[in-house]
Image 1 (cartoon, rainbow over the protein chains, first blue to last red):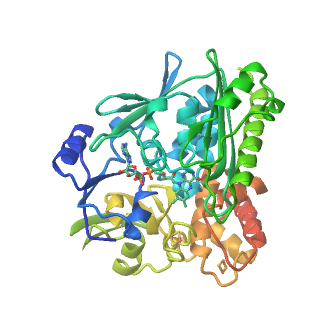
Image 2 (image 1 turned 90 degrees about the vertical axis):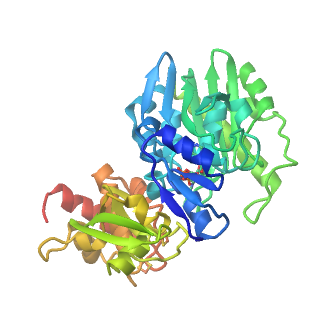
Length: 268
Length: 158
Ligand SMILES: Cc1cc2nc3c(=O)[nH]c(=O)nc-3n(C[C@H](O)[C@H](O)[C@H](O)COP(=O)(O)OP(=O)(O)OC[C@H]3O[C@@H](n4cnc5c(N)ncnc54)[C@H](O)[C@@H]3O)c2cc1C
Ligand code: FES
Ligand code: FES
């Protein structure tokens, strides 16, 4: 790791001010992506601005049909939260499937969403649930937030404060995890709301995306078999030492079917 | 350089270290607590697992200064008055180790797991130890040791 300076601001305003005056500084939350990256010298920053302990970024609240989760809330705390389990059980389940216990004890929602790893879990929930990313500068709709591999709408110095999830009628997540890393080889988040069905896919393409053909098919018939004929564009799917494109495409379809099957058991 | 003050196994330690110092190196090199092992150094194996404010973390993937002001528990802090902690005893009795390299991390992860789930099923044990790798045992006796640990802890016996 290159030498750096660590700072722990006392408030969100102080953190934002520090970032604005130090262009080479970087936010640090759980460090579960950033610290390994720094150790491999894949990045170099003048300062790490630790926001993990800021109270303003913590906490889980359900109000007016919306579930708001602070950006610095750890995966473990989302996984065990009674409020999350009640409002959106699929989200608590997803958080409990991230990495391993040690990773869940440090990693945060905001860090995961800001990082937008193409195989990360939270982006599928944020996009599937049509959540709003609330930052120090504005509110960004999920459909506008994710911009492909490790890319988001976030600007320099912009800090995610919380993510607001509209509580759906029903939602379910199915993930095929990589047995070593825990990341998704394919993860599908299916959501049913009064407006219709949304299907978000992670792990398969260069970034999280909505599978629109599946949404249309499921709006007609909310059954696993409805997905058999749904077209899936795979030319930009990831091919790596683990699996090829066709295999990944099949995994996506199977995970989507499993998620739809889970919906049935989740009446609300 | 930064002044890092951490309470480790109940004793307060203050050291001036570089900001980039990892918690694992702080424990091993500054404090001489070499029970915390570094296996992969890439956040995968869990050999370096310690507890920070009561939660299991991988100390190779956290800066010491991130734990500034925190309470840290390492494998050296488990035994009390010369008596092994029930999880240590269970690993010994069930032969939950061969070379022993992964054992400090396995035990710290198990202590963490049993705090959340005092009576885990086999599936929950496997899911709960996903952050820890063992190259020797094939895990069978580790799972046995965790089951026995749970029993010992529930019985309240030391
Ligand atoms: C062994 C291992 C297994 C893992 N498995 C999985 C998995 O199965 N699924 C999965 O989804 N993830 C997995 N992860 C990643 C994990 O979920 C990370 O916690 C997460 O991706 C990053 O969150 P963090 O809080 O640790 O962020 P950090 O590492 O601290 O930061 C990540 C990035 O986000 C930025 N950032 C942090 N907070 C904010 C904020 N509030 N506003 C704006 N930018 C911010 C940082 O500047 C940095 O660029 C794994 C990690 C490890 C080490
Ligand atoms: S040494 Fe920390 S996880 Fe392997
Ligand atoms: S006992 Fe040798 S690595 Fe586990």
